[in-house]
Image 1 (cartoon, helix red, strand yellow):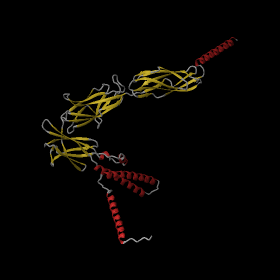
Image 2 (cartoon, rainbow, N blue to C red):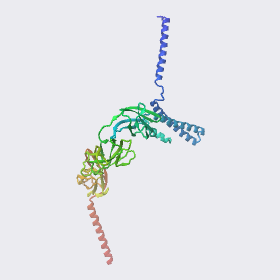
Image 3 (cartoon, rainbow, N blue to C red):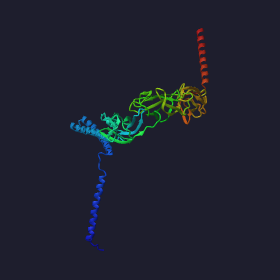
Image 4 (tube, one colour):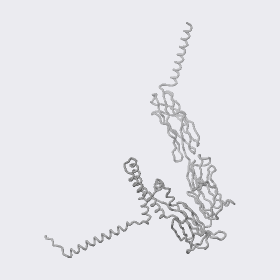
Length: 491
């Protein structure tokens, strides 16, 4: 069949469809390209730029070290070495710039709480709790890389806020004294409380904070202080589990809702006297005996460390709950101003140690020796029903004295003996090994000593009979020598 040529109309339609397809393709390409435009102010891109700078720095550093090695062997010129060093130093600077750029964009200062209190003299006090929440995630090796560069900069230094100026504003007017608070330094993760005296009674206020070349303004509602204890105490965790001979730690936070500047005593009530405790400042590791809230500070954090005795004292049941209370008392009149209930569950540590008087013993096939042993309770609690596990040559039978050790107090030693009662079908002389261990139970835990090996040397025959024969032969020999000597002397 003969094909007919396309008409002009059909040719025009084909050309229009082709032209429309080309235009649509250009539009889609432009749209897809617009979606990946680099935005230098986006924190995600700065994060990627930092990661790129880290890898570039490592790569250029490796090249520079290689160039130094080649130059030491006169394989490259000084010019090539200096060029490699220059590229390496530029990568180092770009790494620090990328880190600085990201740290300036990350959110830092967080307002956690704004509370108002009415003082007895009629003044309205507002306390604001700030927290430095700045941190760099996903780059744990940044500090290590910076240290390798010899730089004194660290991520903690970059995210430490310095010279923070804070004012309380309402309708563009400062309405609180002091007009401006200055926080010299606030490290990542730390908090600070600022105290103001309102000059105008308002329910909301604008907090203006200036730091790191920026000014943040936030409009917040003021929370009314709740009547209650002068000091609110919270503990994390409230209940602890620890073994005897260790230290249980409680992270405590004290919120002052009363008058600042007061001195408070810290006491634990209900803790057994064998348990000692101390309060530690987590920032300085100094021991604290009194609790004091300085001016402009109404949150204080301490760590309570309770030291458990090495051994379970009499009257204390392991794995049972010990409840005790933390009391905050006024230093002047002893009035209770706050507190918290805490719990401690002490766990006993079971440990058995097996020792032998002699690790090598000798005997005969007819008269095997007796093995003398010592079993020591090296743990912190008493152990009961200690059983023997003796593994010797096939067919051997053993008798332990005592068969079962009913009780060993912590630190005590019990002496025992193991006697070979039968060698079975094996009556040959030689050197044999016997593995011995002891075991007990502490709750659901299995306590076992290390396996000890006794080397036993057995001679052939009955050792006692052999000894008698040797003794008789010696007597006969000595008698013969005496007779011969006497006869020779008479001649």
